[in-house]
Image 1 (cartoon, rainbow, N blue to C red):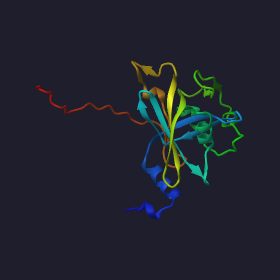
Image 2 (image 1 turned 90 degrees about the horizontal axis):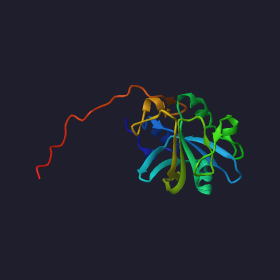
Image 3 (image 1 turned 135 degrees about the vertical axis):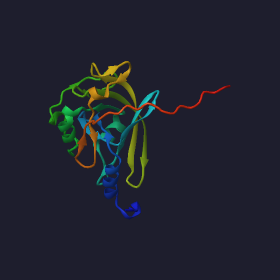
Image 4 (image 1 turned 180 degrees about the vertical axis):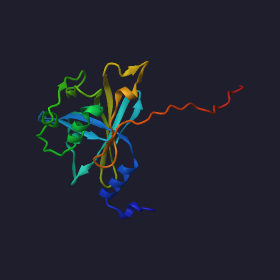
Length: 205
């Protein structure tokens, strides 16, 4: 089978790509509007782009030509929190993806507890095992859809006790949620640890 993307609209290409690029980690983002409304939304086009300073990128698209509240809030306030949700939070995470008017707080609607952040004004959720306070760094727009790739610097990491061992996050203890195509999610399956079989020869210089 061959598919020519030039023959497809943006929606069909989106469905195709989100079924191919799987599984995807999910950034669960709190942001604050100019009127003080605490917004919450998940984004699965998400990765890290720098380790020093630590920077994370999320891609935020448009619906009917309008950007999601999160994009407006981040560009206005230049502060937000990215959370990593675990499996007990799967239902709440999914329900936070429902579109609401800007004056509606998904955090209040879902009755999620928040705690103050250390470096920014935007509160973080209390329940997720990981929360990262972020400051806006850069925004790039791509394609005809003008999706916004928003890059932010992590100012503070918050990790649940017991998640870090010898400086490394215990992935099984984290129990992160992954996104598949459509309203489908996944948990970690078997974790395989591989060691390099072939090694480059040592230099004789």
